[in-house]
Image 1: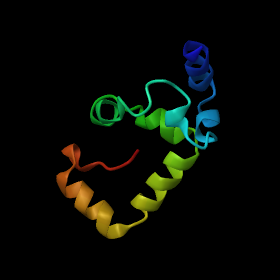
Image 2 (image 1 turned 60 degrees about the vertical axis):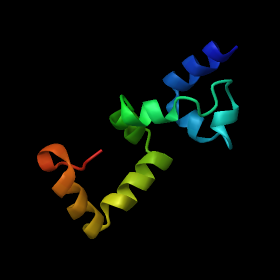
Image 3 (image 1 turned 180 degrees about the vertical axis):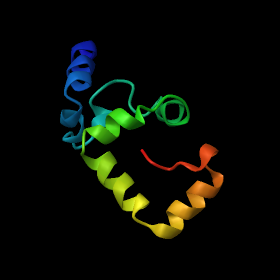
Image 4 (image 1 turned 90 degrees about the vertical axis):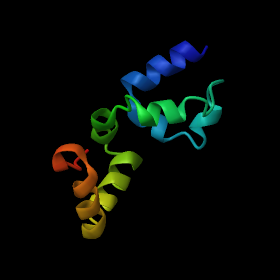
Length: 81
């Protein structure tokens, strides 16, 4: 059951953004959030969906003080999604 849902979301990532509680949609819940955030989060793919992740990233990048601070600590000085 979950395999088909995951495959559907992979092909239409915007649909995942429409779920009111995505962590409740599959049995894994939030069990792998830290690992996903720490290693291998598909930033470019999530941003290109142009939904909540992109909206949040754009708002954060619009904050000059935050962007400057992130550039100081980011490898290579890049903070673009």
